[in-house]
Amino acid sequence: MIEFHQVTKRFGGQAAVKNLDLHLREGAFSVLIGTSGSGKSTTLKMINRLEEHDSGVLRFAGEDIRQLPVLALRRRMGYAIQSIGLFPHWTVAQNIATVPQLQKWSRQKIRDRIDELMALLNLDPQLRERYPHQLSGGQQQRVGVARALAANPEVLLMDEPFGALDPVTRGALQQEMRRIHQLLGRTIVLVTHDIDEALRLADHLVLMNDGEVVQQGTPLSMLTAPKNDFVRAFFGQSELGVRLLSLRDVRGFVRENELCAGEPLRASMSLRDALSKFVETRSQRLPVLDDAGTPCGTLHFADLLREEAGA
Image 1 (cartoon, rainbow, N blue to C red):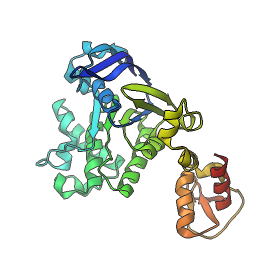
Image 2: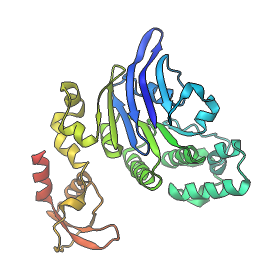
Image 3: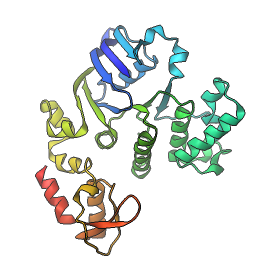
Image 4: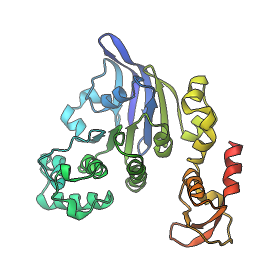
């Protein structure tokens, strides 16, 4: 879907991205992560030509992006950023409708799309006529994502979209983005400095440093087979066990045909979140519900400890 071939970008003679070779496949949730100044945000901005690359070839859906009109290219891509950038004097509905209106959609089509996106992002319909200052930070960010998705873009680009949010709201929006990706199958490219966020969201994880890709692959492969000491240190060897728990879900560790009392876990919950629930409830085992809400067995605290120790 997006291909970088020997792409370089310089600022004031200094290369921010150096001879970058990178393929971001269609339908994947790709996450760029790295140290400060590693070139990850510059890489993202080159995709929709907010930054123009100096050399090399950058292709989108097989076409050289320099052969595409800038506005036409950007209309094929949604863009969501940390500061959100909602228009303060426009309502939620007007903000979401920004790009469809530019593309001269019919009023009914725009109304239907607003309703669809507000439902998708769990935004209360009563928020339609409110202004950004009347929303919480999490609601504002959801509206920003809805606006980025409004015109059915082929790609959604996200630059530190949840960085300014509190941990609870941030976690909820991360879950929403995973759900939306699974529902829509949209190609998503996200930049973050948060390791746990990257591990939770990525299908394809790209670690950058000093303008270059150090290693890329699935989160599990990055944690279990680091290419060098930099990768190992970046992800934190001492926290490896806990981070591996975040990549596995309860479903694979359920003891079936067992019943017990207690606050139930969901089979789709990560083992890391389950571990937090065990600590919170001070329990040794908890019941598990499947996706339909039906009891399917129990999870034992001791099994989590063995899994973490095995990492």
